[in-house]
Length: 318
Ligand code: PPS
Image (cartoon, rainbow, N blue to C red; front, side, top):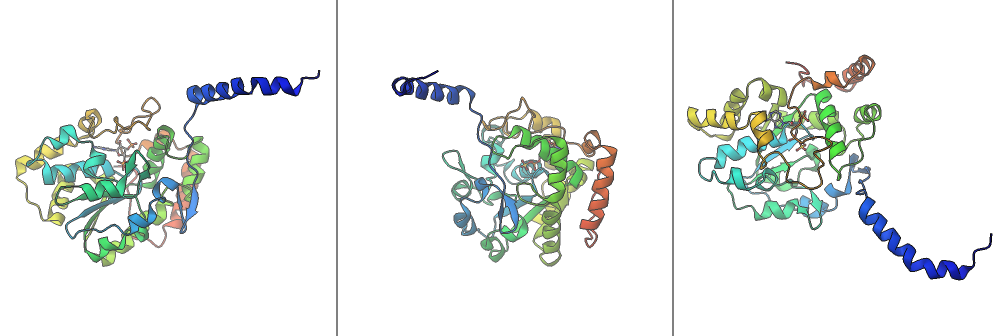
């Protein structure tokens, strides 16, 4: 059948409008792609502002909260925020989301969230700042100013599971895909912020020569939050009353944080809580509900090889 060219030309505007309507109603946000950045897998949201991030001027009393994703960043951020400001400005807890109280230094999503700007605008002392950078990416002023850093690590299996659900629900992360492929990608370090193995080991190695890093574990926090708050207080030189510590320990229990809209990320539009909530389970050992027996064997064998030279010990069950 012959369709004259004139016909196409005449319906061109209608076709164009149809496309716009289609994109508007059915658009799926484009997920970012991973790429190699100085030897670490990254996405552009965390590298686009590289120069400003690297030139960030830390102050001596800044506190950097560093983690591989899903290790308990939000939990420790809330604890530190309460320790420093819970008594003097309690209204912060009910009016400012945790990601504004503790800005994410390297994030750069134009017209949405600019981590460096947020950190620079913080009026608090100390400024609490979050990063997921591997240790070699930390801006040099943090070292020059000898800032205190709190690193939180979580066992690899639970980190992987938590990250999987996070990538499913967070539209500014790469597509999670299916669990089987995700498992392989995690082992190969093809995750945003790179390899879990390199991240936890890199920070651990740095801690051996740098006394201003407090290295803590998610599993210890689950086991005894009060004890870990005590350790944090000794590191930070804080001495809250027993009553205040008890109050903080209660406020940061999983169920309380899960229902607190200023801590649970429910105010972030790019996260789809219908797929998975940010405060998902908060447990040690949920990996057992995801790993097959074969995956567990493969994982353990590979883990032994990758971590054979490390003195780091994790608990995948408590
Ligand atoms: S992020 O996106 O990297 O900043 O995420 P992060 O905050 O590091 O980690 C999220 C996981 O920590 C759990 N979480 C908690 N567990 C127990 N108690 C408390 N209070 C708590 N707060 C956060 C959260 O549920 C995520 O783990 P999963 O296993 O997915 O539940």
